[in-house]
Length: 472
Image 1 (tube, rainbow, N blue to C red):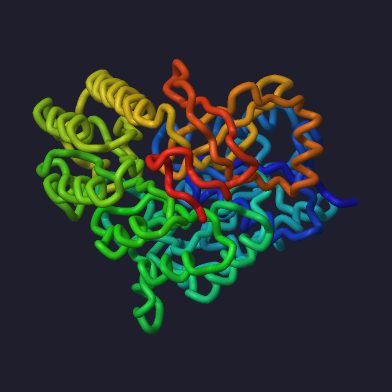
Image 2: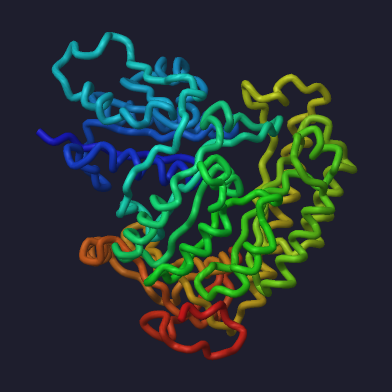
């Protein structure tokens, strides 16, 4: 009998892509469980970027085992690579698979299908040392089952040594996907009907540096993707400050397809903190980059990450960070309260910041982020934005909302559908959403925009010259 698998993904876009890669590797012998269907196997793809991420994964595993005690639980992802024995000890876990072992996940899961006694009494741990991952795992994905946009991973691992981070220990050294493989997958996804393609990687700027000729680097890859027929919107995921060249800025400024959105980690506005973090830039260099982007690309959505309460961060250090974020044309901030990661260099740092101070600084930055994002959204009232419409479930109804190219959340006025009707439409359309031109009419209390469609697609000219970039 064909087994059903329910997938549970936590963390970044990379993990979302990795889940799709695993689904593809498992093939048609395993059916993806729909919402509400019983699954014989639950696959949990974990994140381990913070202690909270670890706790979230453990709670999810406990809930799955409580609700489906007979089901087998497979755990993979960064937490699995970092602490496999810890996860294997959790009730219900049958298999733990590391990053370097993902290519053989089907053979490992197949063993769960066998008769009782095929596995030892204790859970199977398949976690090889991460340094054994020597090349990019090529998987041909043409469908993103749970997403309206298509994620394409082009680079894995990281060669940096940021003291707060354990990514090199969980994902290994930097390795790039062959150029031709990326282009083929993007072309296939566009052919499958995806309107938006998002390029992802652990350290996107390292793309191509490990490939044999070292000639086709990230700007070349972006330029080739933008030239593909049929692509309507292209977006970059998080990218390091040093990786954003003038060539990339110019490509975004000149292409109607390249979404006006950067997410650029800052981490701190204090040079002394950046130095302890082993970040390879100064605060002023980050400042110059953000201003250069904003000047060249008006209304560009610019997000950033900040760590609050890193060891040794003084009040003055934090105030420098706060001032930079306040004055720069940053449109939103992901503020993280620092938590020690086992295995990181910072684990052994002294001068720890008290927990209540860390949390207070995080709250201050989150409030600032909310204020800045609201002001950015207000600038778009009475404009027209091209929005990738994505259905959102609320109880038994579906609200139509989505994201503009410059990363503003837009809700469609009076557009709601019963879940059963939308499920039927999603199946008919293979789950793909469309980009629509939306006239922005108002601002919700939570800072999101609200608007009405002005046509059925993206082919009309804007009503005003100040809307988002036309996709024609």
